[in-house]
Image 1: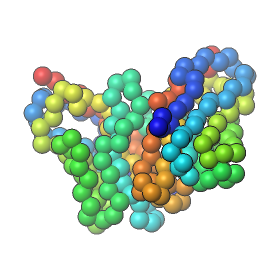
Image 2: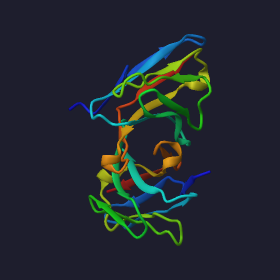
Image 3: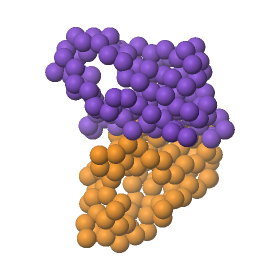
Length: 113
Length: 113
């Protein structure tokens, strides 16, 4: 049981490039979410999903797309990277069975130059 | 919308001192409340949680009680150790955003020998 996995661990992009941050969970959790962590800002919700095929926007969705074609995977796409997207990104999953306790992945540190 | 406010840091304590980190929340429903901890260079770990009013969460000597009348969830520990040095995040979740978390900005704690 690997829990929540994220790849890559580190990434450097140039402004305007696109990329996908991968997130997968093997706990059959119905809920998944993406957060970004910036100094002094805590963690802010980007997008979330309540099940396969269902996604919705969080607090800071601009510049990001998500999809949820399977229960296990919830990739985050940066369409055209900007320096303001330099951050640490965390994926999390949760389930009613665990009282919606969020299980976090190890994070991806992204730098946009 | 829902929000979490926690005391700003950094907080510096001597080993064996008493710790309180204040957290208050606003929410329209009946959220679950959490404390997460982030050690330097690591991801987030759940420290404790409470899912309804008057519940007390506890773990590793830390405690917090869900107080609906004061909308608070203050974190306490009777005797801190150097190994408790970390950033502590208060958070709430409810059904409004797929039970994703709404975080406070975090409180940095440094415990000195």
